[in-house]
Image 1 (cartoon, helix red, strand yellow):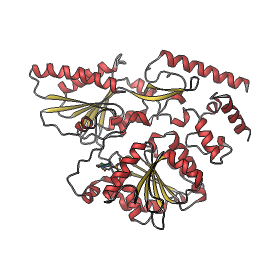
Image 2: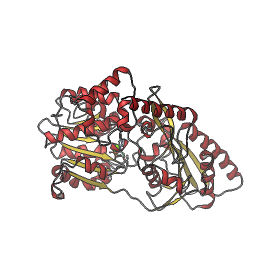
Image 3: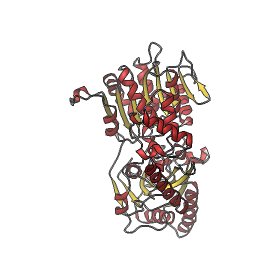
Length: 486
Ligand code: CDP
Ligand code: MG
């Protein structure tokens, strides 16, 4: 035990030192401390506006235009056949608002059963409940409702489709361990891999072994579907016809995207972003630009530098004009909406965005993407027990998602402001919150649910062993050892 706690202290000291000296670091180089404190924060992606290009059409027509509509029967077939269905489809294709309605129309909410849809963010739960209620011509809180902490807008008898945060779902398991009132549970935005999504994933797998009738849908815009399939597939026979898990991909329109790397590392990606936008404007054909930066401050800086440059360019008679627009979650609603507006042929739109544009919103017309390689994520420092926002290198999965934003309407180009060598050093996927956060809430939650041997719990991504021994407090350390001894 002594050597283990000593080791833990070493790692923490190293982590604290690097956190205090570095603000950001090169892709591939060792980050501030160990990987598990990197955090994919749902908060940093904020609550973006929802753009609907078809508002002039009737609700029925709007619903039929969504890409998932073509897959309606297939989705229903898969849910009927498999205990778990993994659905991957681009942002805006209709996963959240349509799938629960298809299920209800097919009878999955009959006999008092409820279709539950979890959301990592509270605002998302409220907003999608409002939209689905509107599509059904009803008020929120009756047939369609939501439940978030301190705000229950659902009816125990009447609600058939319920949106709830993943944290609330875990709470509901305390009163109803087998979630008997639900016929289907859709875990939405599963790629965010928040702490509670991961807890819910493990618990639902456990419940499915007892309740063969419970259906689980894992929905996401970008997901390692194979990993989820392996986790949820309860078939141990090796015969694929006995699989309990199926995968459906709703195709988005994607065209090839050429990737360009820098020859040497760029010393200042803010400056490099401005230069790249200007270079694209000078040398490339038509097409809008989307640049990824890490936060509001950087976005505003790039916007002001570009506005200045654009003035000079138009003074020198450049035929095409630049329309430069910022995009981040704290921006006023009307300004966020501007990024979706069409521009005339003589104008090139340049959207300078935070990670919000990676999966939370989709901007049509983007042909060129500029990727700075970083994202701002919440990091937990177990030594101080404080969380802070830290600029962190993105993962390969994020880099490919960002590049994909360029190929939605026609072939595009992605300019990565890092070398190919640095790209190779990026982690394959962002480390899930479960593997880099304080485990005290997880342990307490699972213990409260009656799971004594927390270490043997079926985690999709088990936390590294050393994380169980972080000194949250004397009491918690005692708790961890008690669990070990069970
Ligand atoms: O979940 P996913 O990103 O696949 O799409 P969704 O949230 O079901 O949204 C499908 C479409 O519904 C969007 O493209 C919007 O046009 C529309 N929508 C809306 O108008 N208002 C909302 N609050 C949510 C969606
Ligand atoms: Mg959605």
